[in-house]
Length: 266
Ligand code: 5RP
Image 1 (spheres, protein in one colour):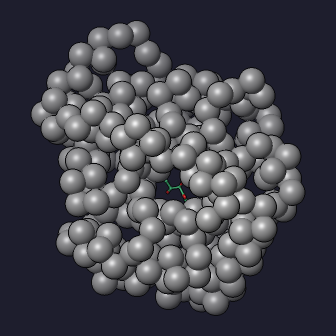
Image 2: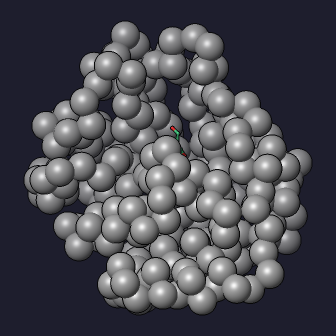
């Protein structure tokens, strides 16, 4: 691994704890103005002080994020579809030289194992890895799950392993029953998404279980920015990921932080 690649990965996975809290705010690239991200600038500026990395598209980066930001950027570089069409029909939407110009520390691309355009998305990943190797840019493969796919250890294990085999440096997936089997069969670090909004206690349990079973962190969006108390929620998630808090301790922190004045995002 080149020095640049290792250095960029260390901006994502914090060397002090070996863990990461990535804030995913890339949802608009196929969902449009999602709840909690309608005013992306406001959501991002409120939450970014508590995120280790920000995952987003270049359009939102350029228009909604202060260029003096210190938080490292992982750029979403796949897309080309919307919620109204076949989601797996993605291509690469941002060139590697622009990712470098934008000072990204990583690029993220979805793969759709088992979906109609599986092959295309896997070849997109292989191409991105080739370019990433050339420029020292880590590639995060997002194992996006199509409508008809089960989110179980067998499916997610398959998708994560394929992503690693094709050269992804980090894999993003979902937490599931027997998650440790997914981790054990994937030779690169795994971060988990939060998925659709659930109660805060459940999202903290998901975080705790994922970390206990071997994830290096979260790349979480809706369960943070759609919470009625988004700042309290990201602080509670951080406490589990970086400080080893139990679910109860994290919930106590959440309740305490709820009392601080904060805004729910539209
Ligand atoms: C979509 C993504 C999202 O960033 C991902 O789903 C994470 O967000 P959430 O925690 O809301 O699921 O990569 O493909």
